[in-house]
Image (cartoon, rainbow, N blue to C red; front, side, top):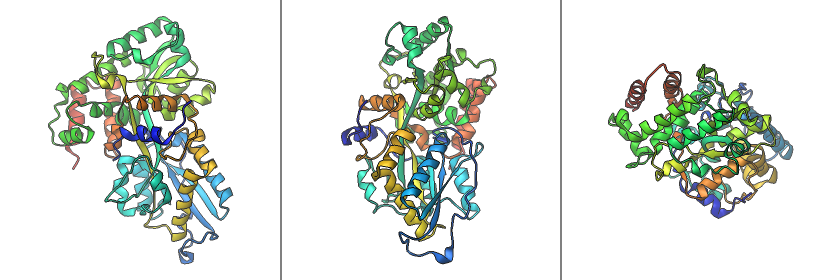
Length: 447
């Protein structure tokens, strides 16, 4: 295992353009726990300047539902260290994006004290966020993320995604130690699928989750445009000048997706393949792969605590020299902001204490690295990464083999609208031309 030194963390972030889940989400998965914050605002009349001894309750809106239990336990640990502060963790619902959930809480006049959003959505709440520019941890960030020259959010995680594989399965299929670098074209990926199938194992399961298909898989086409960056290509989409049906990255990505569909263990009923099913199949060795991100490790370890996993990049062509064919998507995907509109001064101070606890206290650091299984975004945290997927993401970045986590730059409803379009393509209810048209129409509607 490798330590996250200051230099390594700078490298981790060197290819990340911070502007930006899903949930899973989430980048991550959709939430399974739904509760409503209670008494979030406390006694407004009793609000003082935030005395260390003032009894106060704060709420945290967590948009990484796969770590809901761990986040709740972290809140309890924090409260043990600061007995005057009570912490309640709430989550996005299965049918709501983090932005929708946060917006509904604000509309009800009862927002969370601390809200976790995808990086691209932070700016939408800039007028409601507390200025954190003077916090000590700001100097520990490997990369600054500023809005209007101010730090208004706390980077929670560095994450990445691609084709997750079970190392034991692919070692057995390849007759030795499997090297993911050997799969650097669509044709080679198809040949690997054939070998896995001949060994009597399901090559892969494609999860039908809209957040995965929309904000992660489709977004690879935004991040692999050779003549422009993600933001530049999004502007081309908005202007209606993308001509996706003739776009080489878009078509190359869908060529790979077509191969994946052909070897999908759930192709008889692709919309029935859910997050838990695909994860469990890979963890148990019933399937070799699934498309997802390093946040999946928590779910994988539930089914196989001893399992080891890695990433194969999603190829977009049959050109071995294409950078994208050897690279995984990486970005600072989740950020906390502290409410400045409804929270009392005491709640705001308590929220700041929680963020400091994550960065500077052993229990907080342990939660990030060992419990939440994320790559932390702070130079001072030098705990060893303890899971195979985080280690794999880190190694791709250190080798300069990463593309931008383009889902960080899309609107809050992108995962739902275009995730649904991708679901239709997955289920053969729409052809490539129809998919391209739906994507173009979506972007032209964005102002």
